[in-house]
Image (cartoon, rainbow, N blue to C red; front, top):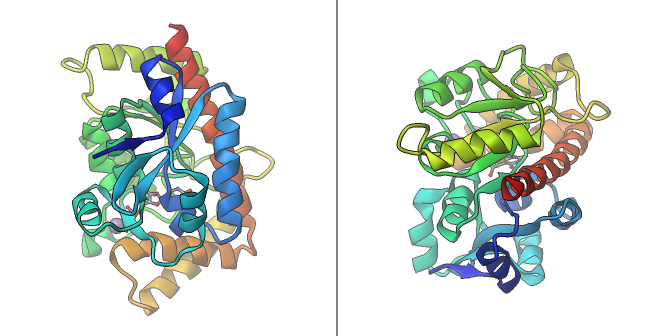
Length: 303
Ligand code: PSU
Ligand code: MN
């Protein structure tokens, strides 16, 4: 069922560091044509840090580990590319669709291919007013059961961050700050929420991961969330972000947006409200996270 690109396949079987990348942020998270440049840039960043990148998605019904340039162009530009969570995979395969994979679907496919490291921007989580909408991203439940180390800048700021952290605790997912004690807030360096675990550097995170994986019967059986604050030069202030989120949420409510459309809608509204600053920050933190994921993958190989 899986197509693994030859370079990625060779890297996996020879024990080289491999970093998985998702495709939803390309198709549904960033504006065209910027998204295509970002997709290429993230792969280049992983390579520059000494690992092999594997961008994951479903290409004409085939779950693909390491999508090629032609498919990447389609994923960036074609409005008909689906947004796939794990539950949507079988239908997309049956109907031979192109589908961009979310964090949940990407880590499931990465794990099936034998890849343990993944980088994204911000994971999905508990939405604000989830007590009414019941909107909680499948990223969280997937992290609880799928053994992949996810490098991110926390959960997206449009979410209810305290509730998201609580949910991660309930699900038994270790949440580790890289050289920080604070849960980052995606566009901003801190949410004001304290993290329970801190790793000083990628090597220490690698050590935790190796122990977790070698003892899955004792420790968490699924993933680990490694949180890296966005680079200082591009981080936005919490006040700027909060003002934009309030407006974005108001728009989403007025337009009665629900389901998988919520996150893409809010990210696009944020870009507009901040005159593109949110996109600049998003791209910079994605790049940093790709770099860190490659470093951790290398550190695990070195152990
Ligand atoms: N990180 C980004 N941009 C994105 C996403 C993450 O910087 O667009 C995507 C991821 O694919 C994540 C999804 O899994 O948003 C969450 O969607 P939802 O809230 O519908 O689960
Ligand atoms: Mn949702």
